[in-house]
Image (cartoon, rainbow, N blue to C red; front, top):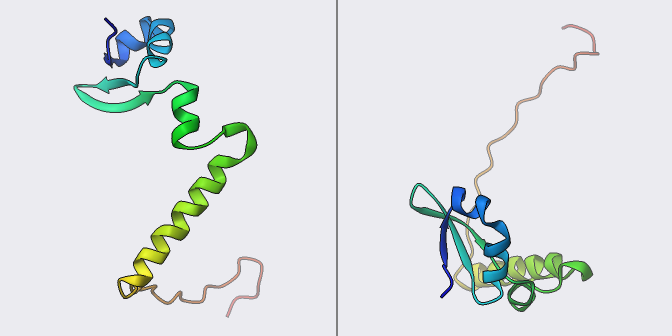
Length: 96
C-alpha cells in the first residue's frame, strides 16, 4: 500500500519513494498538517495541464484567463478602480 500524504520531512527523506508512488496517484505534502504541495506523475500532469515541453502550459493558462474573462463579461462585467497617479519629479530634472 502506498502512502498518499507526507510531511515535508518524510517527503525529503523519502523523495525517491514519493516520486515512485506518484505513478500510482497524487502524493500530498503537508506542512504542519496543512497540504502545501502535490507530486504528480508526468502522465497525470500532462493530462491536467499539457506537455510542459511544448509550451502547452502557457496556452492553458491563457485559455483559462480568456475563459474566466468571458464568464465575467457574461455576468455583467466588473469594475476596476484604479487610483490616479500623482506626477512625481525626476531625480535628474531641475528642482522647482
